[in-house]
Image (cartoon, rainbow, N blue to C red; front, side, top):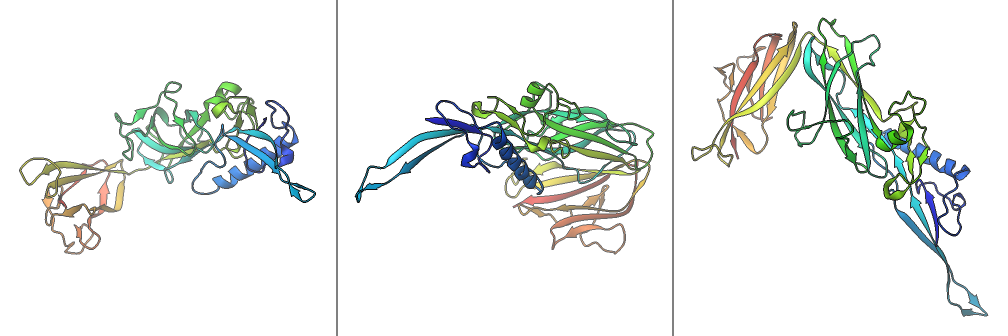
Length: 379
């Protein structure tokens, strides 16, 4: 049985494989270069979309292939003859993509504590890999440097960072293991210095580096001369004892394993929270069953010395709930549901859109929160 190895099945031609008895390997010369260049182009094309996914055959897969010849002699069919069976071991391509989820600069006050940037890390290689996470707050030329506090991993399934239930990341001991195509949401928490000018920008870059790369190259820093180029391979260190091959996402001219998120100082920084403050079931208890009435509370806070203008706070009622008419209050004052009389400080319930809506012409920063309450019945 003949055995060869390759880094991907895509683009492999018969002349690219060196065969022979025993555990022969794919040619490390011109055929290997052609194969890796093809892979790199495919990976770069894939990353141009909105999502990044692994491509090709799983690392560690043995591709078995046997040729058969049928023939006849003097018109009589003969027993077909089979070749030896070749085995081709698919190597692991080390690739990952880091993407900022912030949709632009995150508004912050000066000073501020616990400001959050959110990122998504995706393993776009073809095998499972453990990643070291590194955040660099010293990258904003002409801007300010946020003070890095902690990296958190999204682990409780609830959108947004919940300190105490999402996992605080510990470098080395808590590096996440991702299978191919698996994504992980990561939060980077930082403090903002005081006395910064309005609209000042600060940036944090997050990168995810394969532990295989770190252990073999001795660096996690793309600016280090030891940072490997795409196509570099490490024998037998991939999934299933395949080779591990550095993918195109590590190219320093288009580094996909790193992305940045920005903070921007604003005179008025808004935040809103929602809490179910009370549940009353049909039996006088507090279970959530059909017929239970839930009291919700929204708190809108404006931090800073500026003023937020044209504020519109909306809360869409899901189909599992029914808004209880005339239960809306704003700062303890009962509001009707009809948005009348017309003006700039109206509140009410939009029946057609099943939405509670509160509007304010202006909310001054540094004041008490705007508190909204209403009831909804479980259907």
